[in-house]
Length: 237
Image (cartoon, rainbow, N blue to C red; front, side):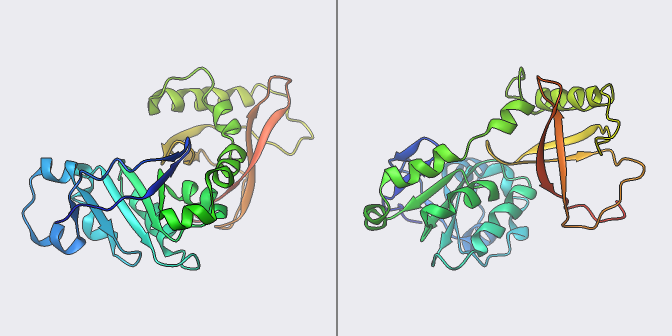
C-alpha cells in the first residue's frame, strides 16, 4: 500500500483539494487476497481500473468509503458503466473518476454515480474552474427539488412525498391529456443528482425496454410537470 498523490478535485461545489492524501491505497488484487479488517477498509482508498469485474467486490462494498475509477483516455467511457454498476450493487461511499475526464463529461459522470472528479493540475490548466462551474451551474436539480419538496434527507421521506404526489394525480381531470395516474412503489437515490424509481404499471400501458416515457407530478398551477425517463425494466415486468 502507498499514499495517493495530489489531484485537483471537482465536486458540485467546484474545485477543491484532495482529502484522500492520508488514505492508504488498496489494489483490487490485494482486497481479494489479503485479510483486511473492516476498519482498514473504511479508512482506505480502493483504486480500480475501468475493466475490473466489480461483482467480485460485492461483499466488501458495505465497508468501503472511497473508491476511484481510472479513466486512461477521454475516449474510453467504460468507467461510467463501472460506476453505475457499483451503485447498483449497493455502494454508498464516495466514488471518484480519476484521470482523463473532460469538462463536457461532468453531467454524464454525475448521472453515472460519481461524487467527485480528480484531474491533474496540468489538465486543470487546460480546463480551469470557470469551465467546470458552468457545467455545474447548468446541471440544476429543479425536478428533483420538486419531487422532494417538503421532505427531509431520508430516503423514506422522499419516497412518501413521491407516492403522495402520484396518488394526487388520480384526483386530477386527465381527460384528453393522454396521461394516466400511477403510484411510485420504490425510489433509489444513487447520488445527490441521480435517482431511479419504480411505478405500478398502468393497466393498458405497453412499452419496449429502452423506450422513453413522459412522467411527472402535478404542478402548482394544476398542470403536470413532466420529464422524459428511460425505461430499464423488461417489457414483461
